[in-house]
Length: 304
Image (spheres, rainbow, N blue to C red):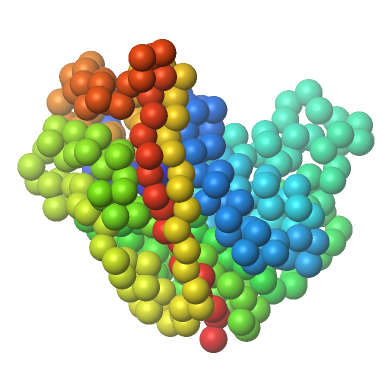
């Protein structure tokens, strides 16, 4: 849920002292991020991502989507200035020879380093010389043929705020006619997780209610594309069920999205855990696993 599946768009959440962001990032990487793999695959198949693709992943998180594109031969750049803990995990995945104890000349991770770049700053930094993994293939010079924002919008009121500005900073580095992919939640009646996400709104402070859960709208993605001056060029829906080995994994995975940070700050971590577990109870199977059917939507737009 990007990410986040959706990252925390609730104001003041970054100051919440009771959230261990490193642990949340690890839970995201190990539990939650894989839930959107069907979405990544559907988009990459439709756009025929391969060796000719130069991809810029905005809000790239811990980098699973980038890794999947790189495995198809694409040259990938990831940018995520708002989630440094997740970006650190992306480095472990995509730039393994930058980890402590790995020598630059040991030969391991060379392919990943020359095919991937990760940026701490805004997308405009992709043209600079200080990005990780800059390699020798001119990764910062040729325009991007594909820009992705796989973190879904349409779950929280205001969760697309800032996306237009983010795209505006990235599009000058994209080729004319390049594809821009936006992702969003499907209709609430087709997303079982929607009922669980309401817990986040109920427990958060009233002043933050304006940023609480809301049903996804049909034209959420088109509105974002229109504000960015992009031309829609197709869309699709993908089934992305959320499956967990047990209730504890489900709670940790959903907490890792950041959607519940404001609730933790406003109430108590144990109380949030308790109410989240209760909301998940209808989705438990007899063998103890947790399963929720969801549909996500993507929009393909083009740079004019």
